[in-house]
Length: 477
Ligand code: FAD
Image (cartoon, rainbow, N blue to C red; front, side):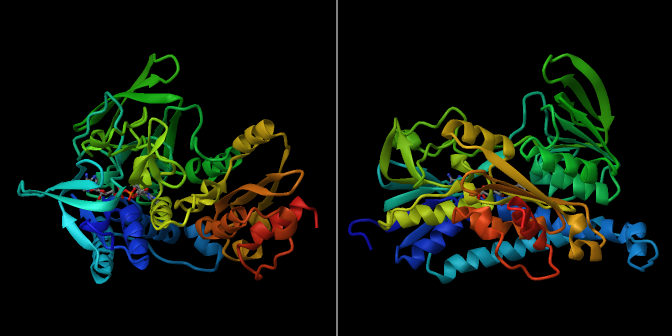
């Protein structure tokens, strides 16, 4: 325990980032407190990963059981499949309560002090806490980790009423199933909700301002994903178009304009509208000015790869920022990994985050996953550093397990350096892609080459043989 401080470590924000940091801090022997102003578990547990995956699990099952053609090909026939919207919503809500309870108990069991209230930096190594009843106290800590997370971004012109026009915060509650829903944004959140709503029988208009759907994904993956996840479903797409104005009500009125020319193109009336246009950091009112820290131009907290907060190019001693609030990678596992890295540096073991090996997934049916660089980014890196890249692809339609499941739509794409064979990126679209990505993530973390990976042995018949095949094709075994 550090002499002269109330705590070795105080963490502001008990989302998955703060939680991951707290668990690791205790294992390193640090006396730790965590401050939370709202729901323990933050976005992931209450309004993000957990409820959305519960909805995807239930709606995915409905889609599967209603796919008579697919079932028939496996020799199965069933009658009509009914579902209860409220019961599906309850499944998500119950899971949220369970995981929130588990997370809180794990902190209590380990002796982390949980302080409820709004935490703010009050000078070097000092935190003030305003509690719900207006009380205020100040505590001192040798180190402080900021983990305040993020909130949905709502573009100007869009009015949220939480009922007919809403963000994922309300969407995960599944309070209604609108007959016709517009989804603004085709990133992973928009895509997952279009999977849920289309499985449960809603008609969808998917609006994307950029000139292609799923702009964050590798192009080959996005193209195939569009053919499987969008085209055959009850989803109309409007690409290169943005929602200039959204007025809640019955109906919801959406004014659409061309994203490049800003000219009006159409007005549509729908039953509901989900706004999934990205997330912004929750970094207001954190008292950062008291230690001379300025946010970057997008309001993220500037950090280095050790997660130390930086101000005017200098490290601010004993101040760290992790998770969505620093904007490096806005994903749950990235937040908790950053929490662990910050604690490692606090206890004097210098470590940095290896962003290239952090995987990501969209839990649609089938799933999308990736790790490392897209082909475009790899080409740019190659040009900057003077190497050429190559790609190798393999297909689920050549995989026995995928064929046995009769779910053979899918591809794995490996991007690697031509000279050394080092894997730079892996992208998968297909059944269980989110579970398959981790061997690629480990390979990238260890900077392995396609030559060495092609000699690994995969169990037969498994979906992971798709990746095995891609490695083998890269070196033409
Ligand atoms: P948060 O989880 O946002 O937690 C921050 C916490 O800090 C909050 O509880 C907040 O109340 C508290 N706080 C803020 N300021 C203060 C203060 N001053 N004092 C006290 N407390 C404060 N990621 C994945 O990896 N996989 C997924 O499948 C996935 N699905 C998602 C689905 C949806 C619909 C959404 C919205 C997000 C999803 N994410 C997913 C992203 C993931 O939820 C976030 O990346 C993750 O929650 C970030 O964790 P965090 O700890 O940085 O912040």
